[in-house]
Every structure is written in structure tokens, then in C-alpha cells.
Image 1 (cartoon, rainbow, N blue to C red):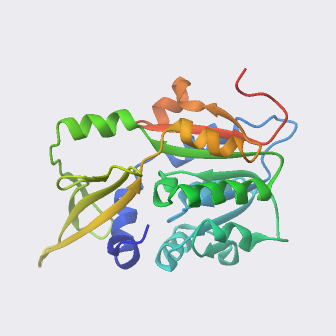
Image 2: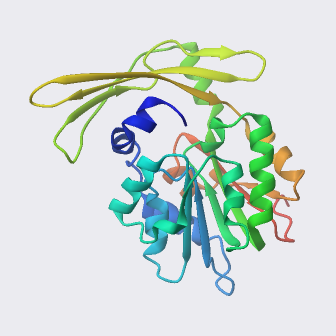
Amino acid sequence: MKNKLYKEFASYYADVTNDRDFKAQLELILDTYDSNNPCRSFLELFAGQSLHSIEALKKNDIDVWAIDSSAEMKQLAIAEGFQNPAQYIVNDLPEAILDTAGLTKFDCITCLYNGLSILNMEGVYHLLKNCRQKLNDNGKLFVEMHDIFLMTEYLSDPKIHYTELKNSRGEHIEYAWPSGKIKWNPYNYRAEVPVQFLIKSSQRTDTIEFTSYDHIYCAEHIIFLASLHGFQARILTDISAWKALFSNAIILELSVGDKNLND
């Protein structure tokens, strides 16, 4: 994600994306592993302030890594408790996964917060390929995607809705995402989404406006691309616990093990 909110105002992006139960989401992910072969190594892609990674660090027996394109986000992650700065890689995906070459392989890789939407189809293909190379024999990749039904529902009845919150610095934030009409490229389903933030302090109100660019993929797209690299897929949001903790999203588990997860 290369927009001025994420690069220049990373703390505000963090303010509006930390509204999850990161501990419970991580526990769901870890519970998919057999007790005799638990997750011992964890990589978070598009990590941001890496709050899932920080929860993994609390387990003490998991080797935790993170990747993001933003040096500002890395600093926020360190402030939040990411303990080993050398294991938070700042570089662009999908290439950055290979920056760990020779260092470690992973039992678990996560690609949450619709991170794949940043990449075009070729980029998704290479990200899946690189993840396959970096997973252990029983490793898993967890992918969060847009619920296309909710996207089309908004398009049929577009209404601007502002969400309000107060951050730890005492600033009042109102943001609309989207803040206007979404523009679509009909050939690759790339959406141009206008976004507006109003940052209010006791002295002033600042307005941040930018455009977020998102590629919209359905689960079938990703499952097919993953199959080209030997992944087997399971849709986890059919399970009530996952649906509750990842509302308004689709979660895929991509496995490199021998078990046929589609049976």
C-alpha cells in the first residue's frame, strides 16, 4: 500500500486498523496445527504494526518474522513490542519474502488485511510461489480477502459513512473509506477508492485525502493460482468461529501438506 496515509501518516492508519481481537485471531490460526507438530515459526506479510506477530511473540516458543514496505510501520511495531528489529524486513512484496533466504523456513505465513489486493495478478502469482518456497513441509499460508458480495452491495447503494474514534494521543478522528464514488477498471477489477480522514485536535482540524488502489479477487482466483504451486485450499469462513472473528472477509487456508483439504 503506497499512499500518503500509509507512508507519511502511518500512525493514523494504525489507529483505524487496530480494532481487531488479534490474540483470538492468532489462536484460531495456531489451533489449526496438530498438537504433535505445532507452529514454531511465523511470518506476517503486509505486517503494518505487526499486532498478530506481537501476539505470537508472547508464546515464547515461536520464531517470529514480519515484512512490510513501510519503515514508519516498522517503528510503530517496535514501539508496540516487536522484539527483534532484524526480523522485521522493510521491502516490497512479493520479492521481500526471499530476503529471508537461507535464514529460516516457516510453519505459518499470514497475509491478512486484504494484503493481496495491493498486488496485480502477476504479483499474486509470484507471492504464492515465494511463499511455497519458504514454507516447511507441513506449513500453511492464511489469506484474508474482500467479501465481494459486500463490495457489490455498496456499489448498488453507495453511501458515505464516517467512522469516529479517539486515538491514544487524544485526537478525534473521523474517516470515510470510501469517501466518494469508487472507480473500476473493467478489465482487471482494479478499484480506485477515495478516502478522507479528518484529524481534530484542540487547536486545528487537518484533512487527509488520498486514493487507495485495490485489486478485487474472488476465492476461486486465489485457489486456482495457489494450486499451480502445489497448495491445497480450505475456506475457513464457513466455520462459525472464523466468521465471527473475521467478519466481512473471506479467509483461506492454503496448505502444502499431503492431506486433501477439499474432501
